[in-house]
Image 1: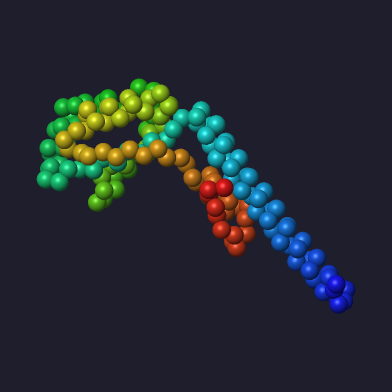
Image 2 (image 1 turned 180 degrees about the vertical axis):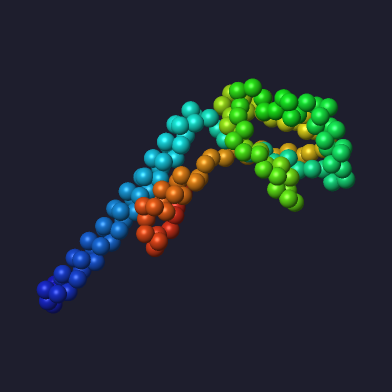
Length: 152
């Protein structure tokens, strides 16, 4: 079948290299999945919820602050049982708030935002997760020639 021994050895080495590469990358993906599971376990299964508060066009800063003060937003937000993870102001977008929220408190957060920010802001809600540990694990455990597939 093979004309000489060298051809057979080259083919065996190629097959072994491809198999090793596949196994190595599979193990690295498993490590990234373990990091995601660890991240979820460490938060007690709480969700991260990102809220974007976009100021309504035509509202002055004074109007916005007046409404927020009247509604008690800064004193009463976030609802009990939730925790602010980050609160940023993004120029051109608005306020971006990330909360740690137990599953049973999602509705409470939604109602609080709607009641206290209705008028000066439009709001958007996104369930998120911390991708940084997954990125770091992947970066630290793979060579630069692989493609990150976060869907695996």
